[in-house]
Image (tube, rainbow, N blue to C red; front, side, top):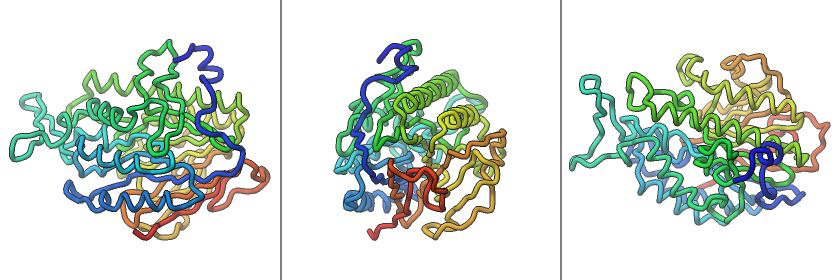
Length: 391
């Protein structure tokens, strides 16, 4: 931890990771491995070969996973989490991961082996197997499953999985005025090629985890406290990252999180209203920063390249799994139409959930031409390709 004043101004410690000035290439993945049913292990079986393809690309020196290590139709179990972690640990390159909704906030759902609120008894009817054993860890309790994720994937605060790399963790560098921020070991920042990377734990699909757990009539005190603590910690961590980027004169900022904050997913816009507070902060800080800010998220599963902080900005999306991107038929800005105008911002939604398995090859050149216009596959120091390895 460090003092509030030092944290607010600069963050704490060094840059985190190696910050060589040359060009680097990053592999970005998310919403993988997925199963169509609770017993579908096809992607889990393919995961080692998929990760080997990332390691086999000699350009790649870092892997980012934007969350969701199983689908919303699979159970939340310790054994499953350990299987994924074991595969990740075999990577030669560092892997930076931010948790997704399916591995903690949504574990309470019946289809993930959690349970259902019983209006007659006021209790939870938990899902069990033929022997009466709970299908999901701790009956799908989200807080218990977040603790499980932390114990497996973040056992060494300040260290990545795969090839070990030092990162700055909020658990070690929290503002002492807000001691609950020490819980967020998964929130990290580091620097590479003059670019500051920051992750925050922001689950998608449930309006920032405000859908009542187990389908209860309202949020429990524990859930309400979870949302309040994490939301405040995330905003403080984003501020810390931008403050550091300014003080270090960083070339750009990359934000890594799980939620697609503009995806209504067949619901009304009110179901993403709880993300506005984060979009407001990112828009304000990005505009003041004045240099490229790239958001990487998963959650909605379909590759998309756009700027939802500028109304009517160019947008490309994959029309079907693995297909070449085409012009979007919708404007994400319309789902959060709050007067933003931040042209130095860009967002990429990473393909996930379906085959062919895909990763984003993201190259970063700190010596880029600052006068060059953005293209369908480039923005500021960033350029990218969608990769679909033969497995």
